[in-house]
Image (cartoon, rainbow, N blue to C red; front, side, top):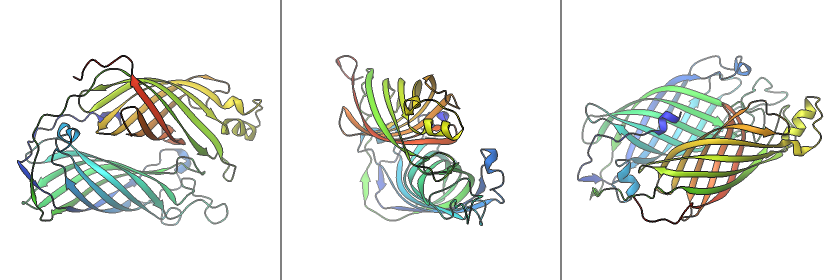
Length: 366
């Protein structure tokens, strides 16, 4: 997944002006729900069909980051899909804002990366009596995430043909169990139509330079989670991340971090497994991580990979991952929303905030 975040400079040059009208897009998807664990082997019985309807608008470079990314397209999507088992899983919906980042090419096709995230809905969920074989989803309301590679062919001034391959994900972040999550891999094709609008000038100025000084940051976040068997209490889980990072070029960010965790569910999971580990304090752990990602103005999309180093009670899986979305409130403070996982297994959602500052006094951007 990290390779998807290395967005190279696109070769196409934008026109001197763009139409400010909306572009309406529809696509048909066909694919399958991935059985990423043996516990899902019985769930997926057929392929999945899906459809989406999108509205989008072309940026024109009024913000520096838009020029750095070669004028991406921003939009809003409604995604409908079958989930591979009409009896146990039913259908799913995703409603999300997205951005199309140009990857390169001009003729015959322009290639782009779509990043989308928002609320999701799953029709059928786990129930001890009515649907006990559904080990994937326990809540109707979930997080919806989509990554998609897209190729676009221009057929006329208004009509475009699209084809792509994408991964769509539904999960509640272990807020309620069972929560194996659903990962839908699809190929797709469709058309988009541009409505008429006022013609406005594209800004061709060079992107503003960014400060490449090292930054120190502290992020605090946490949430609630359940453990198996289903129906247990919700337990507190929280994270503290002390990081050192810097900007990589105009679009990237990378860094390393020392992380501390407290997970009250560790003690109760051990009790359920007939293991006495003393108290809830055994849920304290330390780890290290490295991360990288994209910066789009005030928005940061980051991927972490880390390992536990110190634990009162050793983790079942020594490696952890995180998808984090951060929004800068100002030069120092930011809001944080992230999902901590052990590969495909969600651990818990981390809601919180952070503070960053330069390691040394800034001498100038560049």
